[in-house]
Amino acid sequence: MRYPYNTVQDQQENTYAMDGNNNRIMEWESFSTIGIQVAGGNGIGSSLSLLNNPYYVEVDASDAVYVVDQSNYRIIKGCPSGLQGDLIAGGISGNGLNELKFPTSMDLHPRRFIYCRQQQSSHNKVGNDNASN
Figure (cartoon, rainbow, N blue to C red):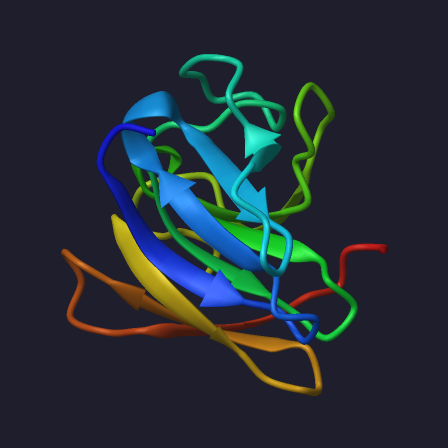
């Protein structure tokens, strides 16, 4: 990993970490020393199977992985290596209701609402995860 940051644990105590310079998310099962790539890692890009500066990761109660993909101005759900993730929010840079401007982090609400903080905006966004599991 190159410059890992933002780690989070799921309910089974598996650890997820951002590997920003390699544009991927890694997971370590509880007590394991070997990580597996669970999202991205296929280079830089804007398709839903690629990441560009992943900045933050969250895992919900069903172990779905959410990624704040900062330089693509979006939040995606899923995105297993080589597969397409679901666009949850953004995808376009701006301050409109369907736009994000350098998102930095997010919080998941148990009722599937998403609260997103942005670096270059005077306000934060609240959205709803309507993507299928």
